[in-house]
Every structure is written in structure tokens, then in C-alpha cells.
Image 1 (tube, one colour):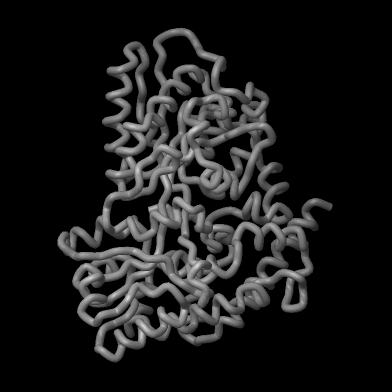
Image 2 (cartoon, one colour):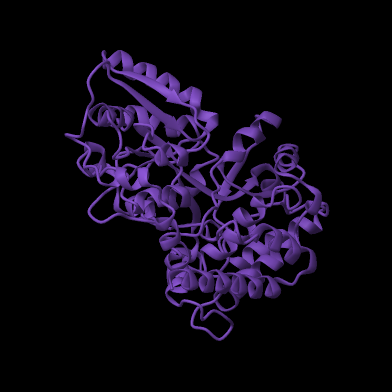
Length: 440
């Protein structure tokens, strides 16, 4: 599961986060940035070549461990150890990061990209296999001049998971417009079926990942919105050129309508409850990504389900899917085994390796020669991935100092989404003022 929110954005909120993040860089981090930017021809210390590999997703550590052992067999003389550190920040502060990182493309990684402490991987063979739409997605938070700092490895696409048996029983189409979606919800409710299972109680990330991000994404371009919001400075409100109250008004009206079709106990349910309930066919739809599919399958391995992009306009062509680069590979400039690290990156990016990983872990390929997803639970979103009709979630651009999940809980309970948007404008203005004051 890789639904990320975190520190103030780099690309999406320069005025809030960039200077503060740069100022917080320790001497070791800055020293690392002075190293050569490129990968090939980097430093390689003497002695037995041993490199450290850091994998962020705990659930696939065993999977990657098997790949590392295979790499050692194919490249005798290089030993790879799995770095099981919980956080990477201390490694960079001590100027001792792992030689190869496999990490979510998120706000935390953006700090290291912008500080220049990750190598340029543009000379790696796999870099030429990354299509432009995926490469642009990898640059949504931060870039470093003249460098390709990360190689996308895996893409997660999320939408509305739906029960095909229930849809077929009531002869319901997969909706392609907002009006069709509302009609489907009404028909389900008339039939005594819960249209949407929601888990707003214990796991607030499920609200902003699903309800918030899905409602916004096909109506507002999140990266462009946050770029404009940042450039606007402290002038944020209902009358400013860009604001939450103005730009998110229609999306949140859609969100308010969607909540009318929730299960009655949504405010007390958790993510685990949602997977269990959907697996037991207690609702027709579920706003979750592929990370939920495995858990649903443990409840009912024979459940016939698919996924579609939530339509929030009456133009079918406007539909888009919520995506995030689930994993990407990088090499720090501070690596003392850069040549060997490059070999490991090249190995992991081989079609037979990367394609198998994405197939086995319910993800979408990120290279121009990757096969389409074959799992029927994923095929409904493949078109959006191929066409670049996707968006990064708006919630991923909002720092955790702004309690978006709690605001959404209150909005759902009261129906007052306007107050939530007003609060978001106020919070963002406060952060912008704080940033400008710190700069002076």
C-alpha cells in the first residue's frame, strides 16, 4: 500500500516547503550532493564488493530478497545485503545511505532529489524504455537540473472496485458519466443493496485517497493547481485567482452526493472492515486501489470483481484514474559501490524481472515494452495507464500538518464541505505566511 502524504511539497508548494527543507539538510547530506551526479564510472571502493539494497515496502521484501540472490548467482563476486532500516533520513544525514534504493515516489523522496544527492541515471539502458507519460509522472514532486534521479519501477492505479455479479444481477452498466453513476447508485439502493462501502472511522487515509482524490482528479489537475497555489503566495481565499474554495467547490459537491450512498456505519469502520465486508458482498462498490485486492481475495478468492475510473463529469472522455509510482529505483551520490549499484539497477530493470514483479504484485508496467495487465481485476484501468489519462492524488500534495482526513470526517458527518475548503485555504495561507516570514 503506497498512499503517501507527508511533508510540504517540493514541486507542488515551493513557497511552503523548499527553503525549509534545504535549510534542514545536514552537513553529511550536502557533502553527498557534491559527489558526481552520474552513475556509470562512479567511485568503487576496494575489498569485497558488498552493496546495500533498501526496499521500503515491507510486504515485498521477501520477493526482492529472492531477486537479490539470483543477482548474486548471475554476477559472482558481488554480495548484496538487504537494508532493513525503518527510515532513510538518518542514513543520508550520516552520509551512509544504502547503495540502491527502491522507494515510493513521494514527498519524502522529493527532498533527496532536489538536494542533488541522487545520481543521474539517464545513461542506464532502461531509461530509454520509460515512456514520456511515466517520466513526467515521476517528476511531479521534484527534479534536479540535468539529472534523471529515479527510474520508475511499478505503477499503482486506483479506481472504483465493483462486484460484477451484483452489477449483472440488476443489469447495471459500468457508468461512464456522473449521471450514470448516480443512476447506478439509486438503482442499487432501491434494490436494497449498499451502493458503496466506506471506511471513514479509523483509517482516515481511506477517505482522502478515495472520496477526496477521486472526486477532484478528473475535474482539477492536482499538480498544476498546487503549483499555481504556491506561486500565489499568501493571497489565498474565495476571491483569489486560485483557492480550495473556488477550484474544489464542484468536486466536493460531487463528494457530498457520493456519501449519500455509503453504508450507514461508515463512520465506525476501518480499512480491514472494508476489505472483509466487500469480500462478503455487502456492497456493490468500494473506493480502493489494487493494494486491497489481495486482502479481499483472502475473504473470497472466487469473487468476480473489476475496476473502473470514477466519472465525475458528464463527458465520458474526461474520466481519469488515480495513480502513483509505487516503486522507483535510485542510487545516492554517496554510494561507495556505484558501479556495482548500477549493475544491480540494470538487472532489476530487465524486462523479465520488472514485468514479473508487476504481474505478481498487481501493478502496472512502466516501460514502453511492458505487457498490459492480464489480471481481470486490473484490466479496467489499463486503458487509462496506456493513454496517460491519469492524475496523482490531490491529497498527496497536502502536508500532514494539515489534518485532511479529520476535516473530511467532519465534512461527511455534517455535510458541510464548504467549511472544510475554507479551512484548507486558511491552513495553506498560514503555512505560506510562516514560510515567507522564515525567509525574511
